Length: 117
Image 1 (cartoon, rainbow, N blue to C red):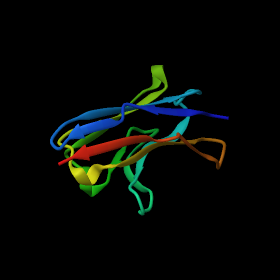
Image 2 (spheres, rainbow, N blue to C red):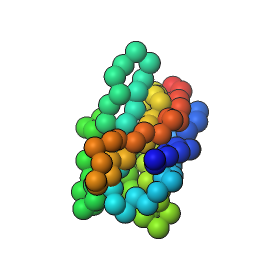
Image 3 (spheres, one colour):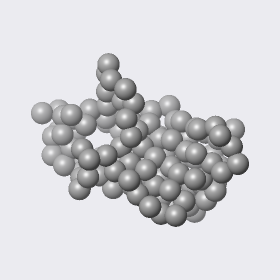
């Protein structure tokens, strides 16, 4: 059982920045991928950014050039640096991890990000 704990959410004005962290209870070295998703009220959960074991990164078009995903294997932590935030970035942000050797996908409890105009 792997636990993911997100932190770093909060209220910020448009144009501001936040850094989200996702700390895993197990080594992230053996993950196939780790990613950030977000879900706004009444909407589906969408991919924001993904980093795989080879270091390849995928971003949603809506966040390209503003958000940066990174990982620190030594700290078992994945980060999402969010700059130039917009009101439409307001959502609950979830961390996700897929490990080799299991089909199970792990999720954190989510952290709220609210961007005021």
